Amino acid sequence: MIFNLNDKTVNVTIPKTVPKLNNDIQDYLHDHFEGEEIYEKLKNYKKEDHYVKGVETIGIWMSGGADSSLLTYVLAKKIKDENLNIDLQPLSVRRGRPNNPIYAGNVIDFIEDDLDFKMKDHIVYYPDKSDEFYREIQIFKDMDNENFKDDLFQVLYSGITCNPPSDDKSISKNKERSRDEETKRPLKTFNGIRYYMNPFFCINKRELRMIYDQLKLTDKLFPLTYSCEGTAEDTKTHTQHCEKCWWCQERFWAFGKYI
Image (cartoon, rainbow, N blue to C red; front, side, top):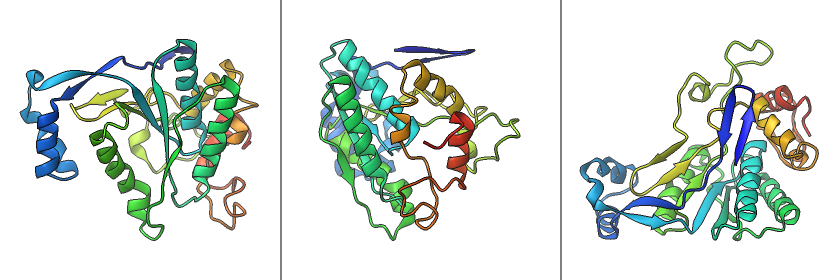
């Protein structure tokens, strides 16, 4: 599915097959190494150590935000419109903003109803709320390891976009410099075990809004999404946008509104 956005083109694709390390090699790596150690060993294997795996299920991390919600809609629409024999697996994490899975669930309900499309059951992980690092970062790495190992899906999507242009003075700088437009991030990566696709890496939220407009979702899907890192007090227990945090600033910068 192709979207033309001024001088950029976004092409959301779903591969039919992916290259995978032979199962006996994968089993050996998982039996003898842990976590990121496994992926350090992958450089030792060659093309002949791989086979072609058909794509049966694709996964997507859903935060309930505007980015991942739109990509989930686009993937579901592509599967439906092209009559692809592929399942869509949504996943969420209960993070510091505990209502994230609820917002993601509302988005899933909307997509299934709007497109007459059924996803696989929404999987939600509940890490220890007291461990911020694990809750916000490590849980995703650990579950990616486990889910790719268990072949829960063959491709995993992320809807992450890039920051606003660095020379735009109308919005403050995001602390995540790795998301700057000048930082070239691959739209897809694969290593024989994991296969990631990140079709929105090359666009910012104003450009994302253009896709919302093209699909006529700005007044239907966007209000269901939630992009805020405000405190429980500022957000009335994460039920409204705080209108103070950077993520709220970015949302207003792109859409001219919070909901």
